[in-house]
Amino acid sequence: MAALPAELVSTFGGAVPASATGTALSLVTVDDDGWPREAHLSVGEVLARGDSSLRLCTWPRSRTTGNLRRDGRALLVAVAGGSAWHIRIRASEHPAPPGAPELAYFVAKAESVEEQPAKYATVERGVAFRLHDPPAVHERWAAQLAALRSIG
Picture 1 (cartoon, helix red, strand yellow):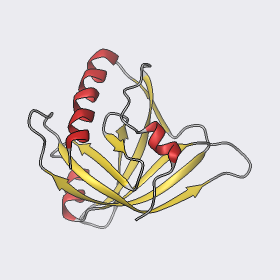
Picture 2 (cartoon, helix red, strand yellow; picture 1 turned 180 degrees about the horizontal axis):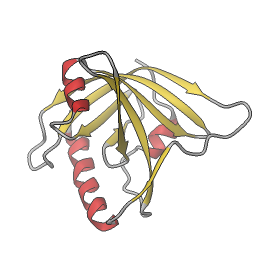
Picture 3 (cartoon, helix red, strand yellow; picture 1 turned 90 degrees about the vertical axis):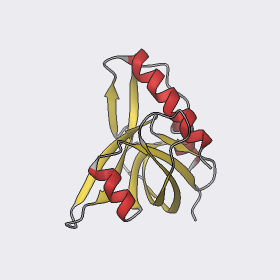
Picture 4 (cartoon, rainbow, N blue to C red; picture 1 turned 180 degrees about the vertical axis):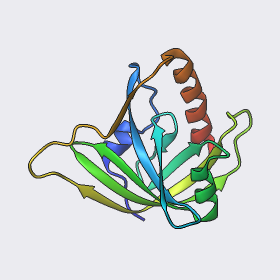
C-alpha cells in the first residue's frame, strides 16, 4: 500500500467547500472491450484518509461503477500541491450505509502513488467546475460524505 499525499488528503478530506467552484479528480477505469473510461469525481464523492485508504461513491448504473465492480482497479488523477498525481487504486464495493443516498459505495486502497510534477510550471488545476445550484449540491455532498465516513 502507498500513502496518499497530504495535498490530496487536504483537498479531498471530506470538507464541503464554501464556494460554488471546485476541483474534481479523474477516475479512469477500463471497459469490457479494453478501452479506458474516464469519470470525474468531486469533493463530495471522494473521501481521502491520511493513510492509503479512500472512499468513493458513484452513480449505481454507470459504466464506471460496472468497471469497478468487475475489476476493482482504477487510476485516480488529481492535481494538488502544484503537481499532478497518478494514484493506482484497488476498490471493492461496500453496502450503502442506512439512509445514505442511492449510490454505489467503494472502499479503495492506494497501490501506488506517483507525483507528476512539471519542472517548468506549477500545475494549478485539473478538472475544475462551477455549480449551478450550490446549496442543493452542498446538501447532497454532505449526505454522501457522511455515508462515506461511516463505511468501515
